[in-house]
Length: 215
Image 1 (tube, rainbow, N blue to C red):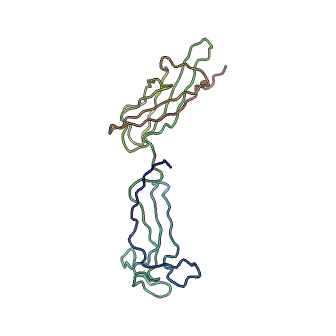
Image 2: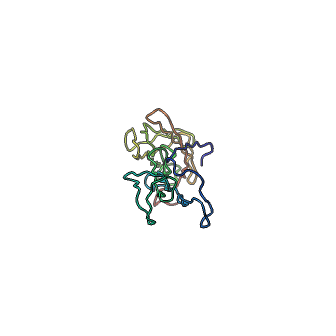
Image 3: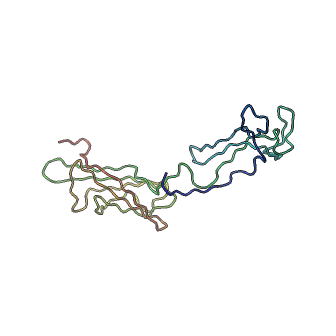
């Protein structure tokens, strides 16, 4: 959890019981209408909460009719055992448990040396794959490597809409960047969103030999 995170409480239901509830389990002699039946779960697809709880309030609606219980009693008076029933409250808005904390995600990166002729030259290949995981379009990406601006050719034009992915490639590196196979280089990516805000993320890439190449 991020330090300083803010939380908002939202009322999920109306009154579910008035007065005391016995907490003595099977030894209860008082009101035990709520039956310890409560719980919260989240949807694996939407990330929204579902709250399951009991209520002993008389409603008498089509969704919550005053039906006869196995004891033969009808629900006629709130806060009575015959009115005990299960309710479900479903979250319809707000943040969710599977909400992405960033506006974009670096889904893959590659930084390779394609020339192993040992003549002192370099033939670098760089690739970065990015997905818009937010709710706002992204107008552009500015990329740096080793603290220097890095020009990439992008697979599509801006803006990058939510859910879409883009790939940036380059066969050159900034002047002054010393390339050594096995070195780790920090890559900084700054996204400019359609609303004018920006977000910067930093990842690391290892300069490795290209596939199938060896010394």
